[in-house]
Image (tube, rainbow, N blue to C red; front, side, top):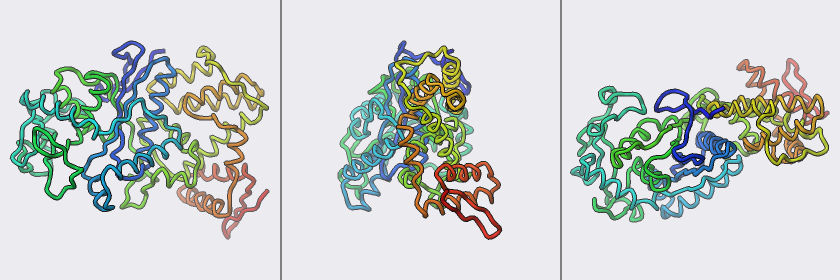
Length: 459
Protein backbone atom coordinates (compact mmCIF):
# COMPACT_ATOMS: atom_id res chain seq x y z
CA UNK A 1 0.00 0.00 0.00
CA UNK A 2 1.21 3.51 -0.82
CA UNK A 3 1.56 6.10 1.92
CA UNK A 4 -1.20 8.71 1.67
CA UNK A 5 -1.13 12.06 3.48
CA UNK A 6 -3.75 14.75 3.93
CA UNK A 7 -2.35 17.84 2.22
CA UNK A 8 -3.77 21.08 3.61
CA UNK A 9 -2.86 22.78 0.34
CA UNK A 10 -4.98 20.45 -1.83
CA UNK A 11 -7.51 19.72 0.93
CA UNK A 12 -7.45 16.01 0.28
CA UNK A 13 -5.63 12.81 1.14
CA UNK A 14 -3.20 12.07 -1.68
CA UNK A 15 -0.41 9.58 -2.44
CA UNK A 16 2.97 10.72 -1.18
CA UNK A 17 6.00 10.67 -3.44
CA UNK A 18 9.17 12.40 -2.24
CA UNK A 19 11.03 14.75 -4.56
CA UNK A 20 14.19 12.69 -4.13
CA UNK A 21 13.52 8.92 -4.19
CA UNK A 22 13.96 7.29 -0.76
CA UNK A 23 14.73 10.62 0.96
CA UNK A 24 12.11 12.76 2.72
CA UNK A 25 12.91 16.33 3.72
CA UNK A 26 10.57 17.73 6.38
CA UNK A 27 10.40 21.03 8.26
CA UNK A 28 8.22 21.64 11.33
CA UNK A 29 7.71 24.96 13.10
CA UNK A 30 9.01 24.49 16.62
CA UNK A 31 9.02 26.46 19.85
CA UNK A 32 9.26 30.15 20.60
CA UNK A 33 11.41 29.50 23.60
CA UNK A 34 10.56 31.88 26.45
CA UNK A 35 8.81 29.50 28.87
CA UNK A 36 8.27 25.81 29.63
CA UNK A 37 6.57 23.65 26.99
CA UNK A 38 2.85 23.08 27.53
CA UNK A 39 0.71 20.13 26.45
CA UNK A 40 -0.23 21.87 23.20
CA UNK A 41 3.44 21.97 22.24
CA UNK A 42 3.72 18.30 23.22
CA UNK A 43 0.78 17.39 20.98
CA UNK A 44 2.37 19.12 17.97
CA UNK A 45 5.81 17.59 18.49
CA UNK A 46 4.26 14.16 19.13
CA UNK A 47 2.38 14.32 15.82
CA UNK A 48 5.51 14.91 13.78
CA UNK A 49 7.63 12.55 15.87
CA UNK A 50 5.24 9.83 14.70
CA UNK A 51 5.47 11.05 11.09
CA UNK A 52 9.26 10.89 11.24
CA UNK A 53 9.24 7.45 12.88
CA UNK A 54 6.83 5.96 10.32
CA UNK A 55 8.70 7.40 7.36
CA UNK A 56 11.90 5.78 8.63
CA UNK A 57 10.08 2.51 9.38
CA UNK A 58 8.86 2.62 5.77
CA UNK A 59 12.45 2.66 4.51
CA UNK A 60 12.95 6.36 3.86
CA UNK A 61 15.95 8.40 4.88
CA UNK A 62 14.46 11.38 6.74
CA UNK A 63 16.01 14.79 7.17
CA UNK A 64 13.81 16.35 9.82
CA UNK A 65 14.26 20.01 10.76
CA UNK A 66 12.40 21.48 13.75
CA UNK A 67 13.43 25.05 14.48
CA UNK A 68 13.71 27.12 17.63
CA UNK A 69 12.64 30.77 17.62
CA UNK A 70 15.04 32.38 20.08
CA UNK A 71 14.44 36.05 19.29
CA UNK A 72 10.94 37.45 19.70
CA UNK A 73 9.02 40.16 21.56
CA UNK A 74 7.93 37.69 24.27
CA UNK A 75 11.49 36.48 24.73
CA UNK A 76 12.76 40.04 25.07
CA UNK A 77 10.08 40.89 27.64
CA UNK A 78 10.77 37.78 29.70
CA UNK A 79 14.53 38.39 29.70
CA UNK A 80 13.94 41.99 30.83
CA UNK A 81 11.55 40.82 33.56
CA UNK A 82 14.19 38.41 34.87
CA UNK A 83 17.03 40.87 34.29
CA UNK A 84 19.11 38.30 32.41
CA UNK A 85 20.60 38.20 28.89
CA UNK A 86 18.36 36.78 26.16
CA UNK A 87 20.82 33.97 25.46
CA UNK A 88 20.77 32.88 29.11
CA UNK A 89 16.98 32.68 29.06
CA UNK A 90 16.79 30.76 25.79
CA UNK A 91 19.57 28.33 26.74
CA UNK A 92 17.71 27.59 29.98
CA UNK A 93 14.37 27.06 28.25
CA UNK A 94 15.86 24.92 25.47
CA UNK A 95 17.46 22.61 28.04
CA UNK A 96 14.12 22.34 29.85
CA UNK A 97 12.33 21.59 26.58
CA UNK A 98 14.76 18.80 25.71
CA UNK A 99 14.29 17.24 29.12
CA UNK A 100 10.50 17.45 29.00
CA UNK A 101 9.95 16.09 25.51
CA UNK A 102 12.46 13.28 26.04
CA UNK A 103 10.29 12.20 28.98
CA UNK A 104 7.44 11.46 26.56
CA UNK A 105 9.64 9.72 24.03
CA UNK A 106 9.96 12.44 21.40
CA UNK A 107 13.14 11.85 19.42
CA UNK A 108 15.49 14.69 18.45
CA UNK A 109 15.14 16.02 14.89
CA UNK A 110 18.02 15.79 12.44
CA UNK A 111 18.61 19.54 12.79
CA UNK A 112 17.34 21.97 15.41
CA UNK A 113 18.37 25.41 14.11
CA UNK A 114 18.11 28.50 16.25
CA UNK A 115 16.80 31.58 14.46
CA UNK A 116 19.65 33.77 15.74
CA UNK A 117 22.14 31.54 13.89
CA UNK A 118 20.51 32.20 10.50
CA UNK A 119 20.15 35.99 10.41
CA UNK A 120 22.50 36.32 7.38
CA UNK A 121 20.30 33.92 5.38
CA UNK A 122 17.21 35.91 6.40
CA UNK A 123 18.79 39.17 5.29
CA UNK A 124 19.76 37.64 1.94
CA UNK A 125 16.16 36.49 1.36
CA UNK A 126 14.77 39.91 2.32
CA UNK A 127 17.16 41.56 -0.13
CA UNK A 128 16.00 39.22 -2.92
CA UNK A 129 12.39 40.16 -2.17
CA UNK A 130 13.21 43.86 -2.22
CA UNK A 131 15.08 43.48 -5.51
CA UNK A 132 11.99 41.81 -7.02
CA UNK A 133 9.68 44.57 -5.83
CA UNK A 134 7.92 42.32 -3.30
CA UNK A 135 9.28 44.12 -0.24
CA UNK A 136 9.46 47.80 0.68
CA UNK A 137 11.05 49.91 3.40
CA UNK A 138 8.54 51.70 5.59
CA UNK A 139 9.05 55.17 7.01
CA UNK A 140 9.63 53.83 10.51
CA UNK A 141 12.51 51.60 9.42
CA UNK A 142 10.68 48.26 9.08
CA UNK A 143 10.84 46.24 5.88
CA UNK A 144 7.44 44.82 4.88
CA UNK A 145 6.24 42.23 2.37
CA UNK A 146 3.77 43.57 -0.20
CA UNK A 147 1.09 40.88 -0.13
CA UNK A 148 -0.95 42.13 -3.10
CA UNK A 149 2.10 41.93 -5.36
CA UNK A 150 2.37 38.15 -4.85
CA UNK A 151 -0.03 36.20 -7.10
CA UNK A 152 -1.80 33.33 -5.36
CA UNK A 153 -1.69 34.68 -1.82
CA UNK A 154 -4.32 32.82 0.21
CA UNK A 155 -4.00 29.44 -1.51
CA UNK A 156 -3.17 27.61 1.72
CA UNK A 157 -5.98 29.15 3.78
CA UNK A 158 -8.36 28.99 0.82
CA UNK A 159 -9.29 32.66 1.05
CA UNK A 160 -9.06 35.42 -1.52
CA UNK A 161 -7.34 38.72 -0.80
CA UNK A 162 -10.70 40.46 -0.65
CA UNK A 163 -12.01 37.94 1.89
CA UNK A 164 -8.89 38.34 4.01
CA UNK A 165 -9.13 42.13 3.79
CA UNK A 166 -12.83 42.02 4.72
CA UNK A 167 -11.84 40.25 7.92
CA UNK A 168 -9.23 42.85 8.81
CA UNK A 169 -10.07 44.46 12.14
CA UNK A 170 -7.17 46.83 12.67
CA UNK A 171 -6.32 50.07 10.95
CA UNK A 172 -3.34 50.21 8.65
CA UNK A 173 -0.29 50.59 10.82
CA UNK A 174 1.96 53.52 10.11
CA UNK A 175 4.23 52.69 7.20
CA UNK A 176 2.16 49.76 5.88
CA UNK A 177 0.73 50.06 2.40
CA UNK A 178 -1.93 47.44 3.15
CA UNK A 179 -3.20 45.84 6.40
CA UNK A 180 -2.29 42.39 5.04
CA UNK A 181 1.36 43.32 4.54
CA UNK A 182 3.65 41.72 7.12
CA UNK A 183 7.02 42.61 8.53
CA UNK A 184 10.23 41.00 7.29
CA UNK A 185 12.66 43.12 9.30
CA UNK A 186 11.71 44.98 12.48
CA UNK A 187 13.68 48.12 13.15
CA UNK A 188 15.28 48.33 16.58
CA UNK A 189 13.61 50.41 19.29
CA UNK A 190 15.73 52.54 21.64
CA UNK A 191 14.39 50.80 24.75
CA UNK A 192 15.27 47.30 23.54
CA UNK A 193 18.37 45.57 24.96
CA UNK A 194 21.52 45.46 22.84
CA UNK A 195 21.35 41.67 22.45
CA UNK A 196 17.99 42.03 20.66
CA UNK A 197 19.52 44.11 17.84
CA UNK A 198 21.30 42.85 14.75
CA UNK A 199 23.19 44.87 12.12
CA UNK A 200 21.77 44.82 8.60
CA UNK A 201 21.64 46.80 5.33
CA UNK A 202 18.17 47.85 6.45
CA UNK A 203 19.42 49.29 9.73
CA UNK A 204 19.71 47.73 13.20
CA UNK A 205 16.84 45.46 14.14
CA UNK A 206 15.75 41.83 14.12
CA UNK A 207 13.94 39.49 11.72
CA UNK A 208 10.19 39.05 11.59
CA UNK A 209 8.85 35.68 12.68
CA UNK A 210 7.73 34.47 9.23
CA UNK A 211 11.05 35.08 7.45
CA UNK A 212 12.88 33.02 10.08
CA UNK A 213 11.24 29.75 9.03
CA UNK A 214 11.61 30.41 5.30
CA UNK A 215 15.33 31.10 5.63
CA UNK A 216 16.08 28.18 7.96
CA UNK A 217 14.10 25.62 5.95
CA UNK A 218 15.61 26.68 2.63
CA UNK A 219 19.12 26.71 4.11
CA UNK A 220 18.84 23.18 5.51
CA UNK A 221 16.44 21.44 3.11
CA UNK A 222 16.70 23.39 -0.14
CA UNK A 223 14.31 25.84 -1.74
CA UNK A 224 11.83 23.08 -2.66
CA UNK A 225 11.18 20.24 -0.21
CA UNK A 226 8.63 17.57 0.68
CA UNK A 227 6.73 18.26 3.90
CA UNK A 228 6.12 21.31 6.06
CA UNK A 229 4.20 20.86 9.31
CA UNK A 230 2.93 22.63 12.38
CA UNK A 231 -0.15 23.32 14.44
CA UNK A 232 -3.41 24.18 12.72
CA UNK A 233 -3.22 27.66 14.25
CA UNK A 234 -0.16 28.35 12.06
CA UNK A 235 -1.94 27.71 8.76
CA UNK A 236 -2.80 31.41 8.55
CA UNK A 237 -1.02 33.75 8.62
CA UNK A 238 2.33 32.14 9.40
CA UNK A 239 2.43 29.37 6.80
CA UNK A 240 0.59 31.45 4.22
CA UNK A 241 3.25 34.12 4.65
CA UNK A 242 6.05 31.56 4.42
CA UNK A 243 4.74 30.46 1.03
CA UNK A 244 4.49 34.03 -0.22
CA UNK A 245 7.98 35.13 0.79
CA UNK A 246 9.71 31.84 -0.10
CA UNK A 247 8.11 31.44 -3.53
CA UNK A 248 8.41 35.17 -4.10
CA UNK A 249 12.15 35.00 -3.45
CA UNK A 250 12.93 31.77 -5.32
CA UNK A 251 10.34 31.73 -8.09
CA UNK A 252 9.56 28.05 -7.51
CA UNK A 253 7.26 25.82 -5.46
CA UNK A 254 8.20 25.96 -1.78
CA UNK A 255 6.65 22.79 -0.31
CA UNK A 256 4.71 19.87 -1.79
CA UNK A 257 2.76 18.69 1.27
CA UNK A 258 1.47 20.87 4.12
CA UNK A 259 0.48 19.04 7.32
CA UNK A 260 -1.32 20.53 10.34
CA UNK A 261 -2.22 18.86 13.62
CA UNK A 262 -5.57 19.54 15.26
CA UNK A 263 -6.33 21.89 18.14
CA UNK A 264 -5.96 20.87 21.77
CA UNK A 265 -8.70 21.42 24.35
CA UNK A 266 -8.63 20.82 28.08
CA UNK A 267 -11.87 19.33 29.44
CA UNK A 268 -13.54 20.38 26.16
CA UNK A 269 -12.42 24.01 26.44
CA UNK A 270 -9.55 25.82 24.77
CA UNK A 271 -6.46 25.76 26.98
CA UNK A 272 -5.89 29.21 28.48
CA UNK A 273 -4.15 30.62 31.51
CA UNK A 274 -7.15 32.89 32.06
CA UNK A 275 -9.42 29.82 32.33
CA UNK A 276 -7.08 28.14 34.78
CA UNK A 277 -6.71 25.05 32.59
CA UNK A 278 -3.16 25.66 31.37
CA UNK A 279 -0.74 22.76 31.89
CA UNK A 280 2.95 22.39 31.13
CA UNK A 281 4.40 18.99 30.31
CA UNK A 282 6.04 19.08 33.74
CA UNK A 283 2.68 19.64 35.42
CA UNK A 284 1.31 16.50 33.79
CA UNK A 285 4.39 14.39 34.54
CA UNK A 286 3.89 14.99 38.25
CA UNK A 287 0.86 12.69 38.08
CA UNK A 288 1.39 10.50 35.00
CA UNK A 289 4.41 8.73 33.57
CA UNK A 290 5.76 9.80 30.21
CA UNK A 291 4.76 6.68 28.30
CA UNK A 292 1.17 7.01 29.45
CA UNK A 293 1.13 10.61 28.19
CA UNK A 294 2.55 9.45 24.86
CA UNK A 295 0.06 6.59 24.54
CA UNK A 296 -2.78 8.95 25.44
CA UNK A 297 -1.88 11.28 22.58
CA UNK A 298 -1.44 8.49 20.04
CA UNK A 299 -5.01 7.30 20.63
CA UNK A 300 -6.27 10.40 18.78
CA UNK A 301 -5.55 11.01 15.09
CA UNK A 302 -3.15 13.89 14.63
CA UNK A 303 -5.63 15.95 12.59
CA UNK A 304 -8.52 15.50 15.03
CA UNK A 305 -9.28 17.85 17.93
CA UNK A 306 -7.58 16.50 21.03
CA UNK A 307 -9.33 16.65 24.41
CA UNK A 308 -6.94 16.62 27.34
CA UNK A 309 -8.28 15.62 30.76
CA UNK A 310 -7.21 13.68 33.82
CA UNK A 311 -10.05 11.23 33.30
CA UNK A 312 -8.90 10.49 29.75
CA UNK A 313 -5.33 10.12 30.97
CA UNK A 314 -6.49 7.63 33.59
CA UNK A 315 -8.27 5.65 30.90
CA UNK A 316 -5.09 5.68 28.80
CA UNK A 317 -3.02 4.50 31.76
CA UNK A 318 -5.37 1.57 32.31
CA UNK A 319 -5.31 0.67 28.60
CA UNK A 320 -1.50 0.81 28.41
CA UNK A 321 -1.29 -1.45 31.47
CA UNK A 322 -3.42 -4.00 29.60
CA UNK A 323 -0.80 -4.14 26.84
CA UNK A 324 2.05 -4.49 29.31
CA UNK A 325 0.09 -7.11 31.28
CA UNK A 326 -0.11 -9.26 28.13
CA UNK A 327 3.67 -9.01 27.66
CA UNK A 328 4.26 -9.75 31.35
CA UNK A 329 2.29 -12.99 31.09
CA UNK A 330 5.23 -14.61 29.30
CA UNK A 331 8.58 -15.38 30.83
CA UNK A 332 10.48 -13.71 27.98
CA UNK A 333 9.63 -11.96 24.73
CA UNK A 334 12.26 -12.23 21.98
CA UNK A 335 13.21 -9.17 19.96
CA UNK A 336 12.36 -9.31 16.26
CA UNK A 337 15.22 -8.52 13.89
CA UNK A 338 12.69 -7.18 11.41
CA UNK A 339 8.92 -7.04 11.01
CA UNK A 340 7.26 -9.29 8.43
CA UNK A 341 4.79 -6.81 6.97
CA UNK A 342 2.89 -9.60 5.19
CA UNK A 343 1.80 -11.05 8.55
CA UNK A 344 -1.93 -10.17 8.96
CA UNK A 345 -1.70 -7.95 12.05
CA UNK A 346 1.48 -6.26 10.79
CA UNK A 347 -0.22 -5.64 7.45
CA UNK A 348 -3.23 -4.12 9.23
CA UNK A 349 -0.91 -1.91 11.29
CA UNK A 350 0.88 -0.78 8.14
CA UNK A 351 -2.39 -0.10 6.33
CA UNK A 352 -3.51 2.15 9.19
CA UNK A 353 -0.26 4.10 9.31
CA UNK A 354 -0.11 4.41 5.52
CA UNK A 355 -3.52 6.07 5.56
CA UNK A 356 -2.45 9.50 6.84
CA UNK A 357 -0.67 8.17 9.96
CA UNK A 358 -3.80 6.67 11.52
CA UNK A 359 -2.38 5.93 14.97
CA UNK A 360 -5.78 4.98 16.52
CA UNK A 361 -6.07 2.23 13.92
CA UNK A 362 -2.51 1.12 14.60
CA UNK A 363 -3.14 1.06 18.37
CA UNK A 364 -6.23 -1.10 17.77
CA UNK A 365 -3.92 -3.69 16.17
CA UNK A 366 -1.79 -3.69 19.32
CA UNK A 367 -4.84 -4.64 21.37
CA UNK A 368 -5.70 -7.43 18.92
CA UNK A 369 -2.23 -8.86 19.45
CA UNK A 370 -2.50 -8.47 23.23
CA UNK A 371 -5.78 -10.39 23.16
CA UNK A 372 -4.09 -13.15 21.15
CA UNK A 373 -1.22 -13.30 23.66
CA UNK A 374 -3.68 -13.56 26.56
CA UNK A 375 -5.68 -16.26 24.75
CA UNK A 376 -2.90 -18.44 23.36
CA UNK A 377 0.29 -17.37 25.16
CA UNK A 378 1.83 -16.96 21.71
CA UNK A 379 5.45 -15.84 21.88
CA UNK A 380 5.31 -14.81 18.23
CA UNK A 381 2.30 -12.55 18.86
CA UNK A 382 4.04 -11.02 21.88
CA UNK A 383 7.22 -10.37 19.87
CA UNK A 384 5.20 -8.68 17.13
CA UNK A 385 3.28 -6.65 19.71
CA UNK A 386 6.51 -5.32 21.14
CA UNK A 387 8.03 -4.66 17.69
CA UNK A 388 5.00 -2.75 16.42
CA UNK A 389 4.84 -0.86 19.70
CA UNK A 390 8.43 0.23 19.12
CA UNK A 391 7.43 1.84 15.81
CA UNK A 392 5.17 4.15 17.84
CA UNK A 393 7.66 4.57 20.68
CA UNK A 394 5.71 2.28 23.04
CA UNK A 395 6.14 -0.95 25.03
CA UNK A 396 9.93 -0.88 25.29
CA UNK A 397 10.15 -0.98 29.09
CA UNK A 398 10.35 -4.15 31.14
CA UNK A 399 6.67 -5.14 31.52
CA UNK A 400 7.04 -6.08 35.16
CA UNK A 401 8.98 -2.89 35.95
CA UNK A 402 6.30 -0.78 34.25
CA UNK A 403 3.46 -2.53 36.03
CA UNK A 404 5.19 -2.33 39.38
CA UNK A 405 6.00 1.34 38.91
CA UNK A 406 2.46 2.07 37.81
CA UNK A 407 1.07 0.35 40.89
CA UNK A 408 2.68 2.45 43.59
CA UNK A 409 0.18 4.93 45.04
CA UNK A 410 0.09 6.91 48.25
CA UNK A 411 -3.07 8.10 49.99
CA UNK A 412 -2.97 11.49 48.26
CA UNK A 413 -2.83 9.78 44.85
CA UNK A 414 -5.74 7.52 45.72
CA UNK A 415 -7.94 10.36 46.96
CA UNK A 416 -7.09 12.37 43.85
CA UNK A 417 -8.19 9.50 41.62
CA UNK A 418 -11.41 9.07 43.62
CA UNK A 419 -12.15 12.78 43.07
CA UNK A 420 -11.48 12.41 39.34
CA UNK A 421 -13.80 9.39 39.21
CA UNK A 422 -16.54 11.34 40.98
CA UNK A 423 -16.13 14.21 38.51
CA UNK A 424 -16.30 11.76 35.58
CA UNK A 425 -19.51 10.22 36.96
CA UNK A 426 -21.02 13.68 37.50
CA UNK A 427 -20.34 14.55 33.86
CA UNK A 428 -21.80 11.12 32.87
CA UNK A 429 -18.46 9.94 31.50
CA UNK A 430 -19.00 6.46 32.90
CA UNK A 431 -16.32 4.86 30.73
CA UNK A 432 -13.65 7.05 32.32
CA UNK A 433 -15.08 6.41 35.80
CA UNK A 434 -15.00 2.65 35.23
CA UNK A 435 -11.45 2.88 33.90
CA UNK A 436 -10.29 4.59 37.11
CA UNK A 437 -11.98 1.90 39.22
CA UNK A 438 -10.34 -0.88 37.17
CA UNK A 439 -6.92 0.77 37.30
CA UNK A 440 -7.10 1.11 41.06
CA UNK A 441 -8.26 -2.51 41.39
CA UNK A 442 -5.27 -3.69 39.36
CA UNK A 443 -3.05 -1.82 41.80
CA UNK A 444 -4.67 -3.42 44.82
CA UNK A 445 -7.10 -0.65 45.76
CA UNK A 446 -10.78 -1.60 46.07
CA UNK A 447 -13.38 1.18 45.98
CA UNK A 448 -16.55 0.97 48.05
CA UNK A 449 -19.43 3.25 47.02
CA UNK A 450 -22.19 4.21 49.42
CA UNK A 451 -24.72 6.99 49.89
CA UNK A 452 -22.14 8.81 52.03
CA UNK A 453 -19.49 8.72 49.30
CA UNK A 454 -16.62 6.48 48.21
CA UNK A 455 -14.09 4.86 50.51
CA UNK A 456 -11.25 2.51 49.72
CA UNK A 457 -9.41 -0.46 51.16
CA UNK A 458 -6.31 -2.33 50.13
CA UNK A 459 -7.06 -5.77 48.72
